[in-house]
Length: 209
Image 1 (tube, rainbow, N blue to C red):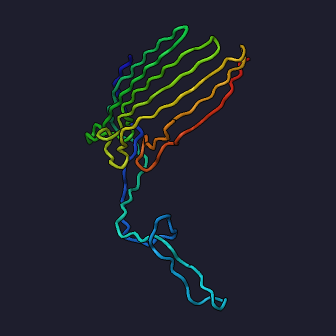
Image 2: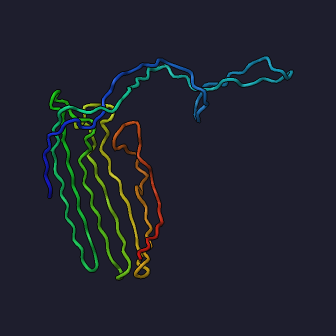
Image 3: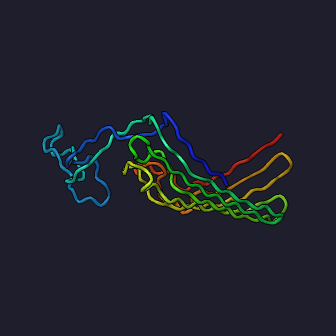
């Protein structure tokens, strides 16, 4: 287990420097399920024909956009801890990790926007033979709501799961297959508008010499 406390200067962070509001608009695509009829131009170079010049979805709401830039905070306070435990047996193995991070601008008292959510990770696996491993893992993240000052990046809690298998072919070659985010969960780590990759299936080979 490791705990830490740091008072820093010129700490990297981000902040909102402006906003804009966009009122209702007409779209330029006709998405599935849209009940907006296509609009056609009656006069075309070809007699008896019409040309579709617009189809789309009418949006009558309001869009709020925030503009963000990187900044250096003059005086900051960051603290947290990390815990890790693992057990490796001839026939099975397990690893547990947990991390927590907090931080604020000492001049304003506001939370830093670069703080990550509390996270717990657990990996469990077995060894059917000396040269093979089968394992699964889970990651549970508490999200960033309440930890950051900018509500636009206050991401929600999420959990993702994966599985893997490896085969040590010989002393120099190892083959590994697996899948990350098996259930194709939609989640964000640092911004509510930037989703992380979905399900990922991989095959890899490692050669040592």
